[in-house]
Image (cartoon, rainbow over all chains, first blue to last red; front, side, top):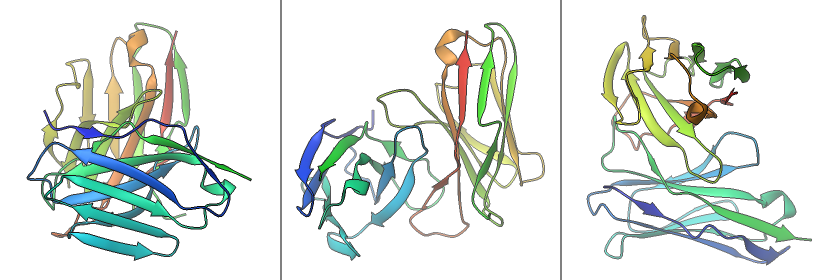
Amino acid sequence: QKEVEQNSGPLSVPEGAIASLNCTYSDRGSQSFFWYRQYSGKSPELIMFIYSNGDKEDGRFTAQLNKASQYVSLLIRDSQPSDSATYLCAVTPFSGNTPLVFGKGTRLSVIA
Amino acid sequence: DTGVSQDPRHKITKRGQNVTFRCDPISEHNRLYWYRQTLGQGPEFLTYFQNEAQLEKSRLLSDRFSAERPKGSFSTLEIQRTEQGDSAMYLCASSPRGGGPNEQFFGPGTRLTVL
């Protein structure tokens, strides 16, 4: 059973702080890792993906991957109230034609 | 709008009725996925297509569920004899061809309520 684990939160951070969201996965063969943002009542929106060990930066967002520890994280710098949402971690075992395995998501609340 | 579209956005039905949802993927995306999401959970995979071929079905997809993508463009998901446990958000996603990391882009979803 392939599993993706996330702390459900809520994670509360003050405006302007760094929010750190974490995810672990069970399938050591996993290759691609995705972070989605989901506002209440809306569908998931892709933020970024990573498939190599290390860091990948995109604007205020940084994804970090450690395959040896089976751990992926998302950092959000200069957090804004508009970042308040549920963040979903998703994993695929291979690149190409495979469905995503999602965690349950972490609810982030940015306090103004 | 060139994103994934889904219709209807909301559906309320009585137990035992049949319902059908439609998904139009991003143009030229050859892969199309259906997921189901309930409150407090992440999306769960149901089935996916590459062009018109249905390549994989989840164990969640009971024999009351059927999906088609007849011409490799839009897809339909039908639920027969609906049950209250089918109440959920049904999400469609598409991804482009190629051997890349398989970024999937989601439509707005169809929220099903079974009374």
